[in-house]
Image: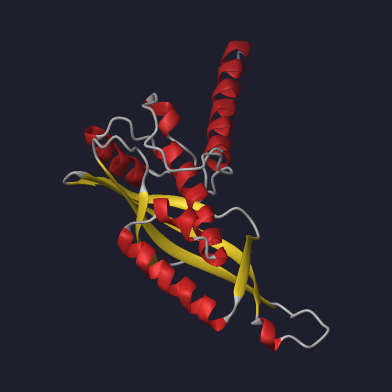
Length: 215
């Protein structure tokens, strides 16, 4: 076999091997958790070049849905939105556990705030206090981003592992000994729907709905 022909054959084989390696190693399997969030709120975000919008964990269907919102709101950036949504999720969960109504108010619609306040009041009536911590950063997946009339709507699926320390009422404590907290660990899977007004001067989103989701 001529040397030149052998070189061509080896080159073709090498190309095939590299292609197979890419197929195995270069693709993600399922949805991937994103990096930890840094944004403290849910900003509309600045317009970015298209490659920057392709954040890890955003599949083709989600990007297509986000593109429909970007047609109405060019400043919408899915990657920045998810970062802000995750941070807002942690803030809201911690604020609800602590009964911090002031922290919750700017992040919730009036209807959701009313529901959360009812839960906080019930816990206060029982004389309980609660602290919550995340065992690991929550996972956030953008599942819907669209425009409905003059509102931008985005639905995010959150998966989280939480540990709660619930202190009983002081009167239940043993005299001379501190009250023993009740420790609860749980996994949660929820859909949170955020909304904002298109064209409004306030670019921040608020939580409009909470629903259970499949883990």
